[in-house]
Every structure is written in structure tokens, then in C-alpha cells.
Length: 497
Image (cartoon, rainbow, N blue to C red):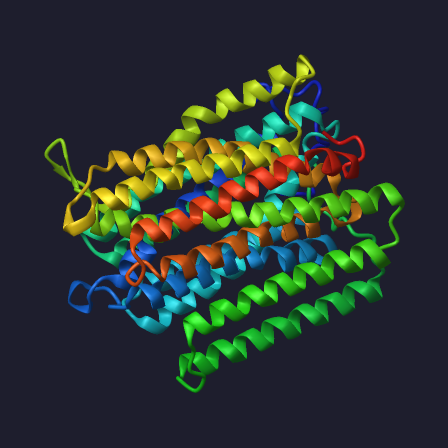
């Protein structure tokens, strides 16, 4: 695939995919099918774990299911850092994406087996595979736009539509089959989606030119051997831990592990940024930009701690507190997971056009300003949920329009933050550690997912207006604080908009 590819066409001249390089289409559809598999399973995950054993579920309470959900979704993004590191030093982004997709497909098919051990083995495989795929496919998108600028931002917005097309279709297909036919059929269909994505990726590789073929970090053979041995040791240790859990020799407390993992992630991030800032050998401008990424990382974590409750607390609200009858159709709760990606599909072109238009007028908001707006919009969405929670008091089933309105605000906030964050990191990060920095960036989502899972665990023990109200306060206050920090952060960014 890689060896016979032609050089990447000039980003200024190649406009064959809706004004973007043709290679973007390959990555677009690879991400489409990967997100189909991920969101198809994700729409079912907490519902499957909290469903009664008699109906084919695991029968867990909200606290345990929320902790497992948070650990899983958090680990998916936590593994993006070693996934970026492995691509930078060993595989190259091209091979890392392929290997990641294979592991993801195997994970979904493992979950298709009606067995608790294979269910958790599947989660582990998906975590490993997504850690390899997610940061590296985004890095390859950036390589298609060597000139950077507003066109790269627009390219990431188009790429982001591929994510959300897959996320839109997945709950409609996997969610319906899982809830209405059989949970494990839903998981199996998610795996089939990933296989289709891999086939498309291999066939379309010729359009990627040399993007992602070679590791980006300049390492000697000895350094590569050391990195390879380290990776093998880590995989071996993980295999031992999984084996001990499999045979019951290592009992686990999901809630305790989730909390400890949150502290571990925070500590790892702090150490990583401190090392890069102090001992990375960068010039003053690069160090300032690394510091800017760190500040944006903190606010990104807060955003995702609220946003990622879509699959946990908001999914449980859809199942337990929302009227499923819509125009005579008894709607599975998981179908509402398609609302956000549908809104992304409708709104992403508008936001992409808006950023380019404002850039031409020299009035485009900076990345920190967009982040601030995104946090505030997220808080407004949860304010709507406070009203929905009050309306559902006493067992009243409320209209799904409450959730739809919440997702509208969340969607606008996401478009202000997520694709902008991906693009900003690729522009701020020193070239030789772009893959690692993308991995670090996904760790902000990891930390947010962990917190979201722990918050969802209080769904049954805390009054819902209080639960959602605490999220309103956290996100809105964070957005206001960030608004006051826009100018200092822009100075750290050293001319990157």
C-alpha cells in the first residue's frame, strides 16, 4: 500500500474531494466506520450493563456501570498517548491505524459472545486499538495540509463530519438491534462496521501519498530496539493482568479504580508537560506553545466531563425518564444518541464556512475564545436538563425534545472546541512530537470521560436537578475564567491563531 503510493499532491492544487485533497476521503471514511463501530457499541454499553440479567444484561447498578463506562471510555483516549508514541518511534501513523483497526474489530466480535469474560476482553481490545488509531489518523489529516491555516481547520471540520456520520448511523442500527433483538447482535454489527473501514482504508491508501509511512521521530536503530522492547514488556504486563482478572485471581473495584485512574492521568500529564517544558530541548517559542497546549488541555478536560455524559447519565435519563413513544413508534432509548451527530452533520459545514469567512475578514475568534464559548454553551445545555429533571419528578416521563434541545447546545459547544482543538494542537506542537501531543490531547478527553462516568454513577443516589445543576456551575464558571485568560494564552501561542 505505502510503497507504491505517489507523492502527496500540493494542498493548494489538490481539491478533488469537495475542495480538499483526495487523501482526506480515505481518512474520512476510515474514521466513519471506526466511529460507527465505537458509537454503535457505546450507545448500548451502559444500558446493557444496567439491564436485568433476565433480559440479557449484566444487572449492575448505576454506580458500578457508570464507573466501568468511565474507565472504558476514559481508557480509550488514555491509550492515545502510547499509541502516538508507538507511531512516532516504531510503526509510523499508516501502520498504527491499520493495526488499531484490526484490534478494534476483534474487540467487538469478542463482545458479541454471550460471556462476561469475553465482554471485558472485548473492551480491552477496543481500548488498545482505538489508542493506536485515533491520534494517528488525525495526525495524517494534518499532513495533507502542509500550509496549515484556515484551510486545515476547514479540513478538520470535514473530517469531523466523517466522525459524526458514523456516530449518527450507529445507534440507529446497532442500538436498535441491540435493544430490540439481542444485545450481542448489536455488538457484532459494530465489529462488521470496523472491518468495512479497514477494507476501505487499504484500498484508498494510494491517495495518501507518503503521509504517515515512516516514524516521525528521528531515532537510531538502538533507540528503536529499546522502544520495541519497552512496548513488548508493557503488552506482556497487560496480558498478565487481564489473565489474572479472567481467572478471578485479581478482584476489581470499578469505582475505586476509576478514581485512582483519574489521579494517575492527572499526574502523568503534569509530569509529561513538565519534562517537555524543562528538558525537551525546545526553543523559547516552542516552550510557550507547549504551555499553551497544557492550559487548553485543562479546559478541554472540563468540557468533556460534561459532554461525555451523553452516553452515560443522559442515556440513562433517556431510558428511565423519557417517553419513548414518538409518532406512534416505540423508540429505543439508544436512538437518541444519534441526535448530536445529526446536528453536527447539519451544523459543521456552517461552522467551517464561518471560521473561513471570519478569517478572511480578520475577525475569526482565537482558539481560546472558541473554547470559552464552547464551555458556556455546554453549561446552557445542562441548564435545560435541570428543567427536564424537575419536570420528570414523581415518575413523569418527559418529552424527548428536552434532550434534543440539550444536544443542540452541546453540539454548538462541541463545534467551537473539538475540531478547533485538534487543529490547534497540530499547529502548536513541535514537529518531532506531534503524534505524542495528539495523544496527550486525547488524554484530556480520557480524563473527562472518567469524570463523566463517576458523575453518572450518582444518577440513582443524587436528585437529578442537583446532579445536572452541578455540571452547569462547573462548565459555565470554567468558560468565564477562560474568557479572562484569552489574551495571555494568545501570547503563549506565539502567533498561531
